[in-house]
Image (cartoon, rainbow, N blue to C red; front, side, top):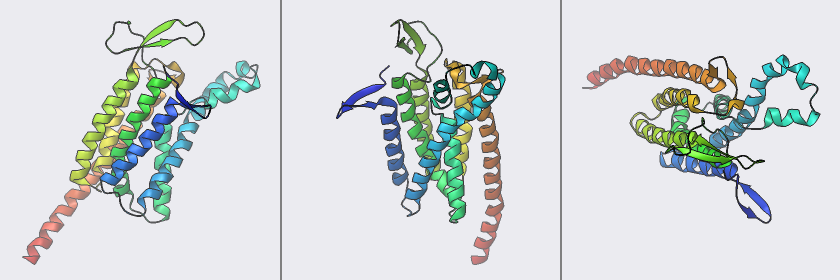
Length: 270
């Protein structure tokens, strides 16, 4: 665990924040590489980042509201300074995804920018940026995996901050980072073949929701919230999967309806 990498002018540079920045930069280069040279793209990209950061910080307190009501008698006896880090102690990817999507929808609708082409363009970049973020999680010591033996090929040894005792955990962050990198490559291929039609977007939603649903079974940080048999992220993954399948079906149906018209027009021209 390396929460800090180095110092600049006496200030420690956090690993997680550094990899978030690297992920955003890599995502922007990929967007430009895929042809995102429209003058609206840079601003939409920035709007999505701002909305994503807000959503990432807000999802945890929103999901903690039921716990506060249920355990209010106990919580109100705790020191006042305890509540803020309990609510805002971490950022959540799904919150960032929801916040970024909402920000993009509001901005694009306000200025009449086609949503599907923009979302299609951003889908591979999002997977790439997320892969960097998971590497940051690994170095920062968050989002760790289930306990494993020290001899496990994917074990990461985490020392206790107070006792120094070591705990072998599955390096699920790096596993997810590798899967996200593969997903980004797949989405780039899909985008190049179907740019602007919404297929890359819906493919991201379907593939990532399945990946995240499975990954969650190997997470060991219970603080992320587990309700019944599933975690908060697994419930969100189910919704994302359903929405993405609906979007994909509508996109494919629209393409099928447009194809005969194209053939008819082509025949008339001949």
